Structures are given as structure tokens and as C-alpha cells.
Image: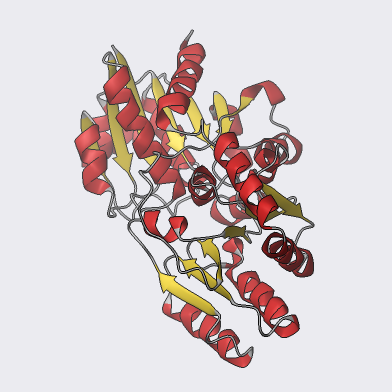
Length: 370
């Protein structure tokens, strides 16, 4: 019997927790001798799903995820008296402690002082976000047995910036549960461009508006709509609405908020626009591709560009709004290319599902223990 502790920084409906949850479901169905423990450092809408899939589930909301000190706290001495969650975990002898995101790494490494486990760090972040969330990331490298990243661009940053040995970093793409396509049929009198993700600088939601403005300024009679699905703070809403109003895009750009089910939204699109400045391997791009939507993204910004080298969309120079707009116009003027690249995207991303990737992740973990 293998004992594995998986630490998630939160239980939100965002990329890293969703991938982990799908993987844990796969483990329960395919590895009956693996015992799953889950520690969530913040509560969220996925908490009960994590609880249902784990043999033991713990939450420690809001107390550990913001602490970056290596002395966080001195849990190997007085843990049982001061902290019930860590006291319970201290009694377990884990084979693997799996830190899902950089935010989970301090907790994983400190917990391991009470165990003799292999620590696996699944790095879902790239350079800027690592520096923002865990500025002393380098302090923990020697305590980590192996690293997982979702793309070569993320792997290369780890080996270059932190001098981590290339052999210690394995690329395993993110994956999603393949949804059943909806029967929704979009109106045929306009082109629909989609973006998705929490409205934030990293996702480039501001660039999404700029691209729409570029196209509408030059082709004011073109029937085209830009829709963005994703959570939005009040501040971001005010900023976006101001930009949309000043640019005269009230009938062109729409931020439609967070959707618990993206199936209808993604199926309605003609093109998926990935405007992220930094996004190792976004799940929504996988979902869009699996539905036959061509993807346009920036070079040097995302691992999605690596998959598009085999077709399925277009990669344009970093932050080149004009080139991204021109790629959209190319597809509008060349419908056969749009359909061809959509079909290619569907084929190229078809294997990024739990049934395939769950086995690859598990073989990786088994090799670590051998």
C-alpha cells in the first residue's frame, strides 16, 4: 500500500486544482493500492469533491498558503500540541508528498521533516508568477526530489533560472475530462471570438479588448463579437467597462462572467484567442481545441504554442496585437483554413485526457519510488 499526500493551495475551479482533482479520480479508479491523503490550504467550491475522492481529507484554510519562511512553523517539535491538522499528518508515513503549485511547496517541504517521503513539486507557474508567489523558491529546491512542469517553456525556465538539473524536471502536459459537446448552434450572421480565464494581467484580458478595437477601427462593418468568460473583480470590471466604452466597443466586446460549465460557451466559438502573457498550459485552450476550435496565442508566453507547432492554430510574436488581429482576419477570409486548423487542433489535443495522462503521471510517480 502506497501512501500519498497531495497538497493543493486551494479548492477553486481553476487550472491546477482541477487537474489534480481529475488525476485523483483516475487514481481511485485505477490504483487500488494507493492511499490518497489531501491537504487543501484554502477552502473552495471543489472542497467536497476533493473530500469525496480522498481516503483522508484535511483543510487548513488561509493560514499556510501565504507563508514563505523555511521556519514555517517549527512543526517537528510542537506540532501535535499546536496544530491539529499537522498533528494528524505527522502520524502518517508518506511515500510521496506532492505539492501542487509553488504555493504548496513550503508546506510540503516542512511536513517532510516529519516523514521520509519523496517530495514532488508540480510547477504550474512560470517565471513572473513564481517570483510573485514564492520569491524564495530557490531555498526549497534541495528538498525536492523531482519536478513536473506542463510544458517545455516552463521546464526551460526552471533549469535556466534556478539551475535545476534537466533530468530532475519532467514535462507532463495538463489534461481535462473530455466533455460531451452540446447541441448548441450559433447564429450564422457574425463571427464569434472567445477568451477565457480570471480577468487579470496574466491572462491578457486588456489585450483582448485592444485586439477587438484594432479590428473594429479598420473594419467597422465586420460582423464580429468578442466574448470573455471568467471571474472578474469589481476593480477589473470597472477598468474593462471604461476601456470598452471609450473605444466604442459596447456592441462588440462582452465579459460574461464565470461559468461553471464552459461547454456551451466553447462550442459556440469560431476561434479561441489565448491572449495570456504567462500561461504554462491553460486547460481552457485544451478544451477549446478538443472541440475543434483553432487557437491563436503569443510566442514565448505559453506551452500551448508548443502544441500548435504541429498545427491547429497560429502563434504570433509576443504582445503583437496587430499580428493577432491579422490572424483572426485571415481565418475570417479563409474559412477552409479555419475548419482545417480546427480539426487539426482537435486531433493534436485529443490525448490530453485523464484516461491517457493519468497513466503517464502514475508511471512517473512509480519510477520515483523505484
